[in-house]
Image 1 (spheres, rainbow, N blue to C red):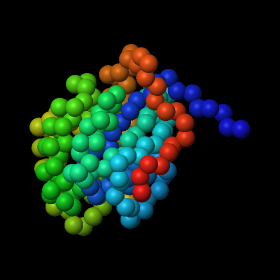
Image 2 (image 1 turned 180 degrees about the vertical axis):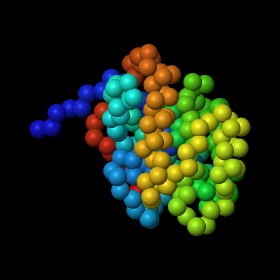
Image 3 (image 1 turned 90 degrees about the vertical axis):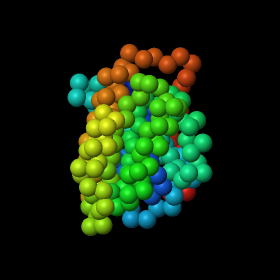
Length: 196
């Protein structure tokens, strides 16, 4: 029998970005420490839990929601902003359209989420030789929205843990005194709800 892991609070983090930016690979690398080149597109949503130890020594649980990036699922995504504390917003450095799509995602976050929500921007797939979005462009975009930018690679495990640690620290600084009333997140085992 395993001992239940203790944590002080639970925070909900959404992974957002266009289809094929590597959201599922990013979360799998962080949670399982694994990488797979090919995944089917996420249909709907999937979530994973992880206990994180903050710099202060405090332990919190993060519930990370992997969301579908296709345009036809955008209206579904809106319902998952409720109760969200943070967003990991990802674009693919080998795809200019996913970079350009960040503005739409930020607009939706501003319209649908709490004004206190924390956002971190990820430039994924920096391991690729087919890069079309350079670091300077990413930094300009991040600065225009006052966001931290992490250049990352789920494949090579670059800045994956660091990005999640950063967003969790920011969330805890903002929400540590927040006590939800009547809302309990599912603390059971992860349930697969998509075809990844």
